Length: 107
Ligand code: FES
Image 1: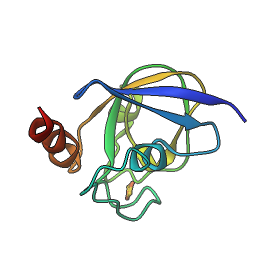
Image 2: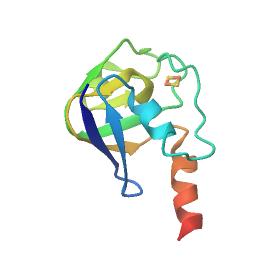
Image 3: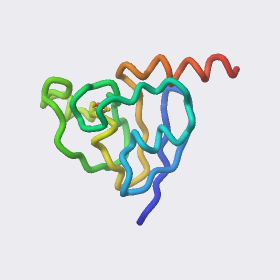
Image 4: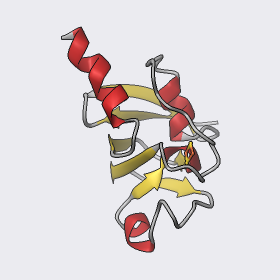
């Protein structure tokens, strides 16, 4: 099992994620409150992110939330993405306000 460093571009935070975990599971391990984890199965769209650097594998995602164009540009559902290298991402889905809010109240 390999571990990679994932950087959240919005906040500068990093977390570790193994090649057996989804990016969403890794992000939850940061202990942020209010990450509205939904279906974990690629169907609800709350966990949408944009991968800006790095390599990953994906599993089936609903076309309702990720168009072919999205997929080509790295806009994906975190619960369906597994890293295969260090990854940098931006949060673009509904969880963005939760991920970024806590950061704001800390500073
Ligand atoms: S948690 Fe539902 S699409 Fe990721």
